[in-house]
Image 1 (tube, rainbow, N blue to C red):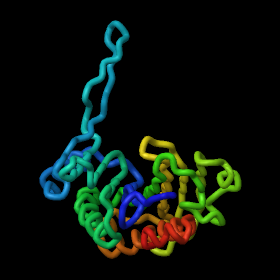
Image 2: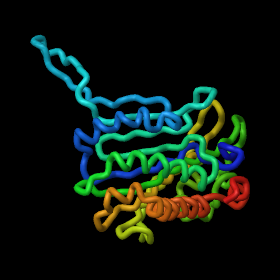
Image 3: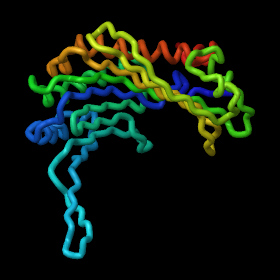
Length: 260
């Protein structure tokens, strides 16, 4: 038996990732502190990220000290204190993660709202976008003492399962990657698929971690990050690629259970 993590779906988290070609300049990093006020209604918990510097004293002991600003981390939590959204902007990346995923349309609309706010601060004609990614982690749980069978979750004819995994018993791991051709942007679409099982106190957990990203062939202007049409077409394609992979991996019952 493999029970989807949530009633509507099996998604534990969904991350929207944008990586720029170069690290953000100091002036841009300093401007990120304004997010504490700008998005306080959506992400009320704010934390600056600083570089940790080390110096060696006369006894050759390493002494850490707080260095200059490197980025920011913002989040929201629910009444139980569980994180619902998280935003990290650091080095050359923007990563926005939904931990309370509902449906694609409302989740993506909320994500685009926040991405455009941050993207406006990061906009720089000399620092185009290099990678646009979408990472989804799905989980299925088999209660303790339940006899494991791989076909409770997966389509055993799926090309994503190795012959060895099919006969490995309850603990196994398959890691793979491949390229497709994207439609929304010139370049190539990299799929990285990590499937594994893990024994926990709550039972056996099956994890499907799919990271799909468009690696740009031509320069994608950083201004596109604040373009609603570009965000929608790009992330709709990444979302559909994720659904296709999950659909090809799961059995018919699991697909019905998560309404895929």
